[in-house]
Image (cartoon, rainbow, N blue to C red):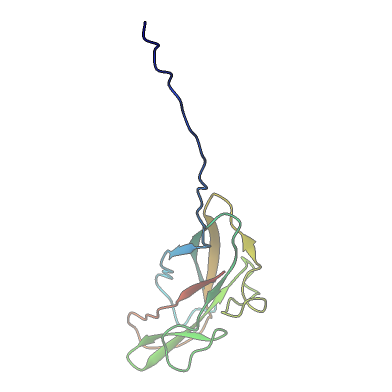
Length: 148
């Protein structure tokens, strides 16, 4: 009588790997001041929101450049209408006392450690009072930089 064949198995393992790179994305809402009265003694304030989404555990800072107007700085930004400039400032705090620039550790908000949720930061803008400039629509473009 024939004997049945016995089944046999062999096993081994293999390593599965992946390297997660730190990565960030950033979006920002426009900063719309609305109507400015150049003869008013009251400054005009507005806010914008920056949303940063980074790999969990990534430490980052967020900077804002001087904008696209030639001669503007991070402490004195300017919107233009032809050759006419309207000064404005961007701040890190609602009291509008801490300028928001582009040098980590100097004039940017403190470092943030990313979690699974996106981080949001508020930009506090102000157009100083009594800038008697010609009527029209003034614009500037500010670049947001996430350093990580």
